[in-house]
Amino acid sequence: MIRKDDSDKFAGINANVQKCGIFSDKELQFFNNLLQYKEVPKKTFLLHQGEICRFEAYVVKGCVRVYFIDAQGAELTLYFAVEDWWVSDIASFQEHKPSTLFIETLEDSELLLLTLETKELLLKEIPLFERVFRLMVQRNLANLQERLFQTVTTSAVEKYLNFLERYPNIPNRVAQHYIASYLGFTPEFLSKVRRRLYK
Amino acid sequence: MIRKDDSDKFAGINANVQKCGIFSDKELQFFNNLLQYKEVPKKTFLLHQGEICRFEAYVVKGCVRVYFIDAQGAELTLYFAVEDWWVSDIASFQEHKPSTLFIETLEDSELLLLTLETKELLLKEIPLFERVFRLMVQRNLANLQERLFQTVTTSAVEKYLNFLERYPNIPNRVAQHYIASYLGFTPEFLSKVRRRLYK
Image 1: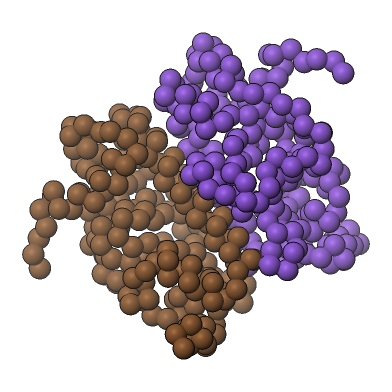
Image 2 (image 1 turned 180 degrees about the horizontal axis):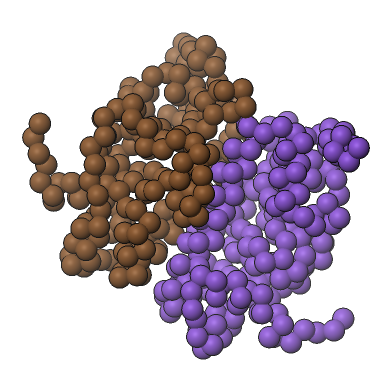
């Protein structure tokens, strides 16, 4: 395996945070030094329901799935995090509460992690990062609200088209049943929707 | 009607923001001067679906309901905002997108409003307010995620008990069918759940 150099590893996350504020090279360096780089094989659990979430992770490469298990034991995918997304259970992370979520890699993934300690240190030293996290959380809230709205208002075909718009590459990367569990469909029903669409 | 003096009007919101950071009297004064105080009679729409949301409102007094209308024309209440809550459609407000939500007062209400302009001015002058809004949005995201989780995992009776825990006073303040539309029940089913509970 070819080892990436640091500039490679941090290029994406630095571009990501620069969208929300202007940081000096020195500030970015401080930020990068706080991040923990981790390579995680596919099918690894980053979090189980009932555990306290100890990270906010930026996806450098790979695909991570966040899901619930419902009262009937069925999986309900909340979202997929691919390159340039952040993933965490913010409620559990921030309030040290047991999580209601499972977080699992679907592909071999490269992550950059903040812990509560390194995040607080970052915010203390460079308060402008408050803005980065505010805008990130706001986007997550908007996405979840939009998802809830679509759940109750749109047809199955529209739901699938909206999914493709949000995640253009996911259908080539993950098994169909994960997509079904995001859409609230059975795998059979998803096949039917896809056939209807591509006929 | 007895007119409240200013210190009265701002006491709650100032205590609310002081939880997230230490602001000087001068900073709070600057913040308070940006807020627009508004008395709104009950049954007034603050936002219709399709409009762009122009406010983030703090509820000094009263009760505001936020809801979707689903494909069958049924109302789905996302949340109630009572004293010391904030209410907005953050996606629409921040990104100038048409809203998917309706926001309506259920009681005569007193609100303190920020517009996008006054909010940006506030954040420019007192960047520590980024933290206030980050923590607020984070709480909202945690609430919505928890709500989604409960929707798929808990029994009807548990759902109602969780609702009472979150909103201890709402049942005395708003009509039963609004509570039903929050819980995803028909009003008849809500009556049945309450009877089962209080037997």
